Length: 195
Image (cartoon, rainbow, N blue to C red; front, side, top):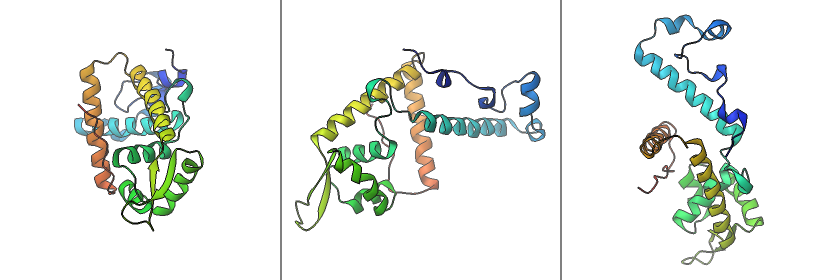
Protein backbone atom coordinates (compact mmCIF):
# COMPACT_ATOMS: atom_id res chain seq x y z
CA UNK A 1 0.00 0.00 0.00
CA UNK A 2 1.51 3.37 -0.96
CA UNK A 3 2.38 5.76 1.81
CA UNK A 4 2.14 9.53 1.77
CA UNK A 5 5.37 11.11 0.48
CA UNK A 6 6.18 12.81 3.78
CA UNK A 7 6.24 9.46 5.54
CA UNK A 8 8.50 7.72 3.03
CA UNK A 9 11.13 10.31 2.23
CA UNK A 10 13.86 11.63 4.46
CA UNK A 11 14.46 15.34 4.14
CA UNK A 12 18.04 16.53 4.39
CA UNK A 13 17.13 18.26 7.65
CA UNK A 14 16.04 14.88 9.03
CA UNK A 15 19.40 13.17 8.55
CA UNK A 16 21.34 12.23 11.63
CA UNK A 17 24.26 14.56 12.40
CA UNK A 18 26.86 11.89 11.66
CA UNK A 19 25.58 10.95 8.20
CA UNK A 20 27.77 12.12 5.31
CA UNK A 21 26.57 15.26 3.56
CA UNK A 22 27.63 16.93 0.41
CA UNK A 23 27.51 20.39 -1.13
CA UNK A 24 25.01 22.93 0.13
CA UNK A 25 23.55 20.40 2.62
CA UNK A 26 26.91 19.94 4.35
CA UNK A 27 27.35 23.70 4.90
CA UNK A 28 24.18 23.92 6.97
CA UNK A 29 24.66 20.80 9.10
CA UNK A 30 28.36 20.66 9.93
CA UNK A 31 29.08 21.92 13.42
CA UNK A 32 32.50 22.64 14.89
CA UNK A 33 31.67 20.52 17.93
CA UNK A 34 30.87 17.49 15.76
CA UNK A 35 34.43 17.26 14.45
CA UNK A 36 35.87 16.64 17.91
CA UNK A 37 33.05 14.41 19.19
CA UNK A 38 33.85 10.86 20.31
CA UNK A 39 32.19 7.85 18.70
CA UNK A 40 29.84 7.60 21.68
CA UNK A 41 29.04 11.31 21.39
CA UNK A 42 28.27 10.95 17.68
CA UNK A 43 25.95 8.02 18.38
CA UNK A 44 24.19 9.96 21.15
CA UNK A 45 23.88 12.99 18.83
CA UNK A 46 22.40 10.75 16.14
CA UNK A 47 20.01 9.18 18.68
CA UNK A 48 18.74 12.49 20.03
CA UNK A 49 18.28 13.79 16.49
CA UNK A 50 16.36 10.71 15.36
CA UNK A 51 14.16 10.83 18.47
CA UNK A 52 13.36 14.49 17.67
CA UNK A 53 12.53 13.57 14.06
CA UNK A 54 10.40 10.66 15.26
CA UNK A 55 8.52 12.86 17.74
CA UNK A 56 7.79 15.42 15.03
CA UNK A 57 6.66 12.83 12.49
CA UNK A 58 4.62 10.94 15.07
CA UNK A 59 2.85 14.20 15.93
CA UNK A 60 2.34 15.07 12.25
CA UNK A 61 0.92 11.68 11.33
CA UNK A 62 -0.40 10.86 14.82
CA UNK A 63 0.57 7.28 13.90
CA UNK A 64 -3.16 7.01 13.44
CA UNK A 65 -3.29 3.90 11.32
CA UNK A 66 -4.46 3.50 7.77
CA UNK A 67 -7.78 2.88 6.08
CA UNK A 68 -11.13 4.07 7.41
CA UNK A 69 -9.96 4.21 11.03
CA UNK A 70 -6.97 6.43 10.18
CA UNK A 71 -6.66 9.30 12.67
CA UNK A 72 -10.12 8.51 14.03
CA UNK A 73 -9.00 8.41 17.65
CA UNK A 74 -6.55 10.73 19.37
CA UNK A 75 -3.67 9.51 21.50
CA UNK A 76 -5.31 10.39 24.83
CA UNK A 77 -8.50 8.48 24.01
CA UNK A 78 -6.52 5.50 22.71
CA UNK A 79 -4.41 5.25 25.87
CA UNK A 80 -7.42 5.70 28.19
CA UNK A 81 -9.43 3.01 26.41
CA UNK A 82 -6.42 0.66 26.42
CA UNK A 83 -5.99 1.11 30.17
CA UNK A 84 -9.68 0.46 30.85
CA UNK A 85 -9.51 -2.65 28.69
CA UNK A 86 -6.40 -3.94 30.50
CA UNK A 87 -7.40 -3.03 34.07
CA UNK A 88 -11.18 -3.14 33.99
CA UNK A 89 -13.51 -0.54 35.52
CA UNK A 90 -11.70 2.23 37.40
CA UNK A 91 -12.45 5.45 39.18
CA UNK A 92 -11.15 8.74 37.81
CA UNK A 93 -8.49 9.04 40.54
CA UNK A 94 -7.15 5.53 39.95
CA UNK A 95 -7.15 6.07 36.19
CA UNK A 96 -5.33 9.40 36.57
CA UNK A 97 -2.79 7.93 38.97
CA UNK A 98 -2.16 4.96 36.71
CA UNK A 99 -1.52 7.20 33.73
CA UNK A 100 0.55 9.77 35.57
CA UNK A 101 -1.82 12.67 34.88
CA UNK A 102 -4.14 14.66 37.10
CA UNK A 103 -7.81 13.87 37.72
CA UNK A 104 -9.07 17.03 36.00
CA UNK A 105 -7.23 16.01 32.80
CA UNK A 106 -8.76 12.53 32.91
CA UNK A 107 -12.21 14.00 33.54
CA UNK A 108 -11.81 16.30 30.52
CA UNK A 109 -10.48 13.50 28.29
CA UNK A 110 -13.13 10.99 29.36
CA UNK A 111 -16.11 13.33 28.81
CA UNK A 112 -16.23 12.93 24.99
CA UNK A 113 -15.67 9.17 25.36
CA UNK A 114 -18.74 8.93 27.61
CA UNK A 115 -20.70 11.19 25.28
CA UNK A 116 -19.70 9.01 22.31
CA UNK A 117 -20.76 5.84 24.10
CA UNK A 118 -17.22 4.40 24.26
CA UNK A 119 -17.09 4.57 28.07
CA UNK A 120 -19.91 4.24 30.58
CA UNK A 121 -20.17 5.53 34.12
CA UNK A 122 -21.39 2.97 36.60
CA UNK A 123 -21.43 2.49 40.37
CA UNK A 124 -18.52 0.79 42.08
CA UNK A 125 -19.42 -2.83 42.93
CA UNK A 126 -18.13 -2.47 46.51
CA UNK A 127 -19.17 1.14 47.15
CA UNK A 128 -22.45 2.27 45.65
CA UNK A 129 -21.53 5.92 46.25
CA UNK A 130 -18.43 5.77 44.05
CA UNK A 131 -18.53 6.03 40.26
CA UNK A 132 -16.27 3.98 38.02
CA UNK A 133 -15.54 4.25 34.34
CA UNK A 134 -16.02 1.15 32.23
CA UNK A 135 -15.24 0.36 28.60
CA UNK A 136 -18.53 -0.19 26.77
CA UNK A 137 -19.05 -2.88 24.11
CA UNK A 138 -19.03 -0.05 21.55
CA UNK A 139 -15.75 1.21 23.05
CA UNK A 140 -14.24 -2.27 22.82
CA UNK A 141 -15.26 -2.56 19.17
CA UNK A 142 -13.85 0.90 18.31
CA UNK A 143 -10.63 0.20 20.19
CA UNK A 144 -10.18 -3.07 18.27
CA UNK A 145 -10.87 -1.28 14.97
CA UNK A 146 -8.34 1.46 15.70
CA UNK A 147 -5.78 -1.01 17.04
CA UNK A 148 -6.12 -3.10 13.87
CA UNK A 149 -5.62 0.01 11.71
CA UNK A 150 -2.52 0.98 13.69
CA UNK A 151 -1.19 -2.58 13.52
CA UNK A 152 -1.59 -2.41 9.74
CA UNK A 153 0.35 0.87 9.67
CA UNK A 154 3.17 -0.75 11.67
CA UNK A 155 3.19 -3.62 9.16
CA UNK A 156 3.46 -1.18 6.24
CA UNK A 157 6.18 0.92 7.89
CA UNK A 158 8.26 -2.16 8.67
CA UNK A 159 7.36 -4.17 5.57
CA UNK A 160 11.01 -4.79 4.65
CA UNK A 161 12.05 -5.64 8.22
CA UNK A 162 12.60 -9.17 9.46
CA UNK A 163 10.48 -10.41 12.35
CA UNK A 164 13.65 -10.29 14.44
CA UNK A 165 14.11 -6.61 13.50
CA UNK A 166 10.56 -5.87 14.61
CA UNK A 167 10.99 -7.72 17.90
CA UNK A 168 14.32 -5.99 18.58
CA UNK A 169 12.89 -2.56 17.79
CA UNK A 170 9.86 -3.19 20.00
CA UNK A 171 12.03 -4.46 22.86
CA UNK A 172 14.41 -1.49 22.63
CA UNK A 173 11.58 1.04 22.27
CA UNK A 174 9.86 -0.45 25.32
CA UNK A 175 13.15 -0.20 27.20
CA UNK A 176 13.58 3.41 26.01
CA UNK A 177 10.03 4.32 27.13
CA UNK A 178 10.69 2.71 30.52
CA UNK A 179 13.88 4.77 30.89
CA UNK A 180 11.96 7.93 29.93
CA UNK A 181 9.33 7.07 32.53
CA UNK A 182 12.17 6.93 35.08
CA UNK A 183 13.12 10.51 34.21
CA UNK A 184 9.51 11.73 34.43
CA UNK A 185 7.93 9.28 36.89
CA UNK A 186 4.33 8.20 36.85
CA UNK A 187 2.74 4.93 37.74
CA UNK A 188 2.09 4.22 34.06
CA UNK A 189 4.03 1.19 32.90
CA UNK A 190 4.73 0.80 29.20
CA UNK A 191 2.66 -2.02 27.79
CA UNK A 192 4.87 -4.97 26.96
CA UNK A 193 3.60 -6.88 23.95
CA UNK A 194 2.81 -10.53 24.41
CA UNK A 195 5.60 -12.72 23.07
